[in-house]
Image (cartoon, rainbow, N blue to C red; front, side, top):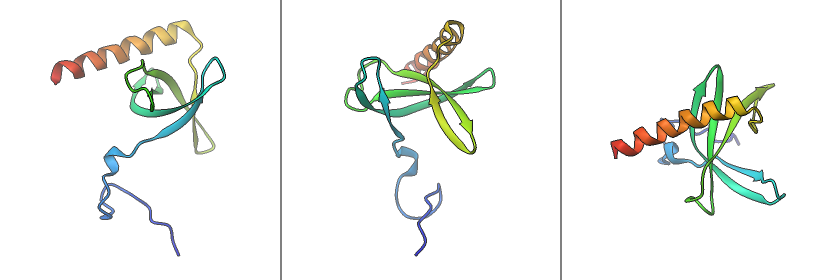
Length: 102
């Protein structure tokens, strides 16, 4: 039996645009949290993901850089202050423009 591969027009009736991408992230205190990827964007040849706490969606989001190795993607924390300042400014502008559209 083959596994059903979902796609935008697979015809299975599921809404693929709203599938959650959930990650288990360990915070600075060692506590695991379920995080949902809500947005991705690019800057300077890197891709970044914005994740929200699945159990506390009102909390501030967290931004990670997405890196790929051997056809697998990994979330990587941003350690460089200049990179962090750049991507948070980009995301704040995106969030501001989206909230103005609503």
